[in-house]
Length: 254
Image 1: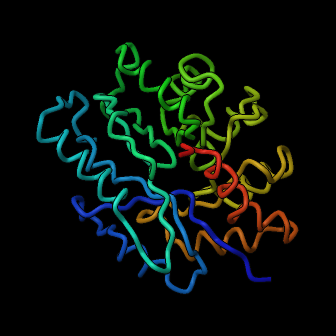
Image 2: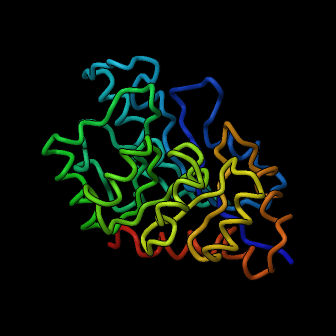
């Protein structure tokens, strides 16, 4: 069976070139994979300095962020569909959202600069995201992930990348009943097949998406991982494209 394949987790930009991750670089890496569309996030190092825990924002970094998000928004290719996700940082610049943006990237690791969750602009940004019905790909520490899901953005549709492996661990989400919530989704980027199959067995095939984590993951290899799962053709079709298409169709309507 020939499947439609949409990559729901890939990084793309032209300012951070270590490693190269422009649209052309992605298309070269994905050649022969059958992937015809992708959700793109700007690279982290185009948004903030992840190696400076006490990072101080500046006009130069704000301009860098705006260029990063605009690059994705402007991408147009005759044979490849781009779904730009807006990478939000502590200026909470939701006024830069346009009708082309189909979701939000909200990301940091435990040793990286922190989001200012107490800033009133954060609350206002989340309400704008809610108003636009935009999904949020959330990669955060475990306690902040719980706070985001249960308090700050209750009811907002949240995608947990890597089946939760970098948000506190897959099993932590299982133990706390997070995967059962109807507004919580997962992507498969770099997750082991055993974890993906366990998720499908416990929670079904309707809220999980294929992702590659390009340039850190290899799109063809990550797609083959899904194609080789011991699940039905219909389930593969949902994981590879159907689920993310349905989610994005309801996001940020005109």
